Image (tube, rainbow, N blue to C red; front, side):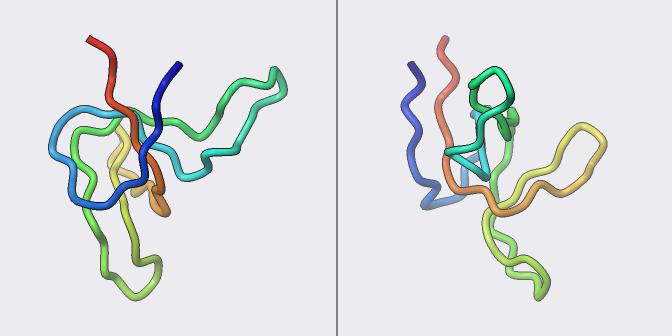
Length: 71
């Protein structure tokens, strides 16, 4: 089981992130999960908060929790 923690500071290593800790897909599994290598705080006027970017360089915003990736 993954131990999710609130994002409280910038993260500069590979982690799992979510913007909806309670989100579930039709199979009941957790959804809204991404692998991030940088989580930073965006103070932009539109959607301030914790963000990362996907492989297509699209902003994923509203991040709330992260989990370390098991080794």
